[in-house]
Image 1: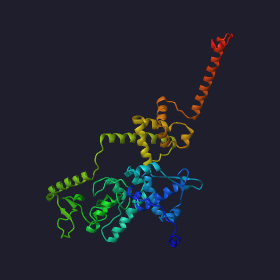
Image 2 (image 1 turned 45 degrees about the horizontal axis):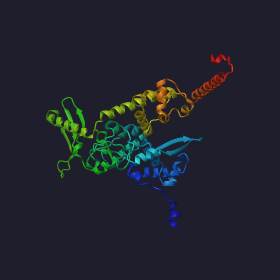
Image 3 (image 1 turned 30 degrees about the vertical axis):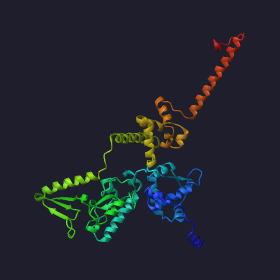
Image 4 (image 1 turned 135 degrees about the horizontal axis):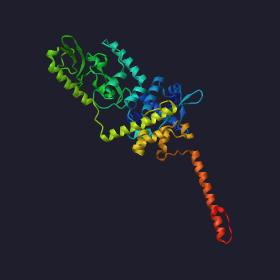
Length: 408
């Protein structure tokens, strides 16, 4: 066909990666192609350069890097540098992917966004400033990472938790102007908040009644001036900016009312409190990770990697070992086993034989391959000695005199 000759081969695409996992188009296309190659290898690992990704699925290098970050945060994609010179190899975590497609999608934490997507947040900060400057509104450089640290992963529009990394649609993280720029807002730190991309798009240039908040408080020697930006227009035909300036003597009651409204808005944005059981689980997992990480640093002089996959392993350790998991995790790093040392005492190895390591911790006796062989040899010698003794007794019982001191 002439079209195939001109355009090249078509590539597979799984719509469920967007519909169920909430990935953007680039990440869904990247994952679809990664699954294609992973299924054609023996161990799941395959090698691709950014140029090869672009040639196969048409994604630019920055789109490939963003897709990798999103998938690593979800625990779906594993990466490892191998060979000399080092090359980047990829592998799909099939268990995590299948669980995510079944509805158990790994939530992205604030810590992951601030570390994995730090470069993306910096890019968004620069883009936001350029956009505001082009519109001719008051603008200053705002570090979006600082906005996240202040408000947390909570949507300022709907008040629900944000559990997806930065993106352009659905439940992904975006940043919203509390007073839209089209409604006279400014691009300053106090006028920015995190929001779902879908909520941000639905809001548009509208102002929300629940978004009333204090923008700044200035103190002078004679009075305190409170500048309030009211986000709801009282009259549709009014074009005046929603800013009110009052002196302290005239605004005591209004300031009190504002504080109540702001507190109510904040309570709506705040996620629901976890149950006692959930809090206990989180504390236990933090203790497990703290014990493991400290022992790891003491042994290797470097901090262990922590990502979505590792977080899931910590939870699994807690489920299998309970309150003893933290102590066992610390003990695990001290085991001098060649296999564990080659794998740098990764949590996956511990999880594979968690109950065994718990027994070693409880008895205070490490059991590696050499120790097991020594015990096996000792038992073989005992068995041989017992068998020889049985034969000597049998001869004596048969009337053959035996002065073997071994049997006295």
